[in-house]
Every structure is written in structure tokens, then in C-alpha cells.
Amino acid sequence: MALHKKIQNHAQATKNYIETLCELIGEDINREGLYKTSNRVSNLAELIYSGYNTDISKILDSVFSDGACNEMVIIKDIEFYSMCEHHLLPFFGKISIGYIPNKQVVGISNLAKLVEIFSRRLQIQENLTTQIADTIMQYLNPKGVMVVCEALHLCMAMRGTSKQNATIITSAVRGLFQKDSKTRIEFMQLVNK
Image (cartoon, rainbow, N blue to C red; front, side):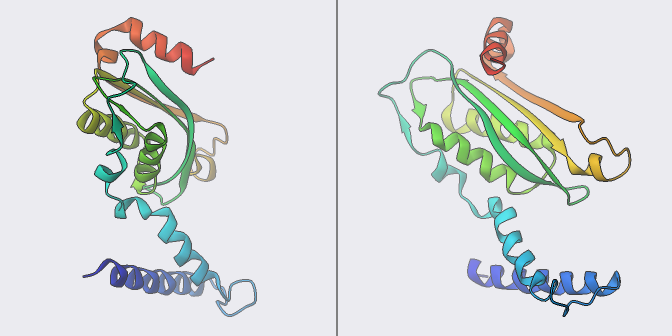
């Protein structure tokens, strides 16, 4: 099935779901405030879950040997928004990535795009963090990579324990960062400045 047709089917299914949900909770989908909500949610879903339709190899294909160094490259505080696969509620925060090139560097904005791809999927934070690190290792073959993710989860804030400010921190450590504690410490010091 062509991607365009899948998107059309998804849009209609989303509209049907929202209309059914409103009916089940006793809302009138035709009242002024809700009249176009099913369309809005359908359009929003296309954006929120757009990470499934992006080819990662095209994002990380912009590599350069000119300018490659043996030193740490860091991009910090990349903002992201994702959806928890357990409750379909948002979690959001920032991700910092450090890697040590091995004869090539990647366009730095491409790392932010990589975060965007994986965060635009149903996800748990632990997987988001490791997927980014593993993908960088696979496509760039650096000497090492470290990814740290810090996020607030609405599933914790809105339900159950109702902890409004609890922050979850996850990390993924590969290659030289895993083997050398000095490298990990240097990364953390630079990221926490």
C-alpha cells in the first residue's frame, strides 16, 4: 500500500477514534469546541508519529572526513517530545550526545534530526536513549558515543503517583566512553556546565 494511502487510512481511523471517544465519555462531537477536534488530532498524529516514515540512512549520510578529529564532539540539550508507549501520554525533555569520531564527522544538525526521528515514535525513554547511541555506532562507527536523556513523564504527573517534578535520567554508553571512565567524566562535566 502506498504511503499516501496509508496516511489517508490513518487519518480516517484517528477521526473515527476521537469521535467514538467523545461519544463514550458523553461529549457532543458536534458542539463548537469539538466540531473540528477529530481533524486536529488526526493532523497532530501525523506529526507526533512521523518518525516511522523517515529513512535513518538518509539522515546520517552527510559525513565528512575533512575536519575529522580525535576529540569529543558534543551536542547538548536537544529538546524532544515523545509519546509513552504504555499510556499514550507525552514525555519530554532534553538529550545530549557526545561522540569521538573515527576518521569522519557527521553534520551536527543530523544528530538533532536523529533524536527527532526516534522521539516521534511510540517509545519508552530507555529505548529512545539506546536507539540513538546504537544508530550512531552503526552508521558512523565512532570510537565511542554517549547519550544522556533527561525527561518529565506525564504518565507520572497525571496518574498513579502524581509526581509533578520527578525527572527520569537515562544514559547509553558505547565504545571508548564505556571503557574509559575519564572520557565519561569529561563528557558529563562538559554537558553539566
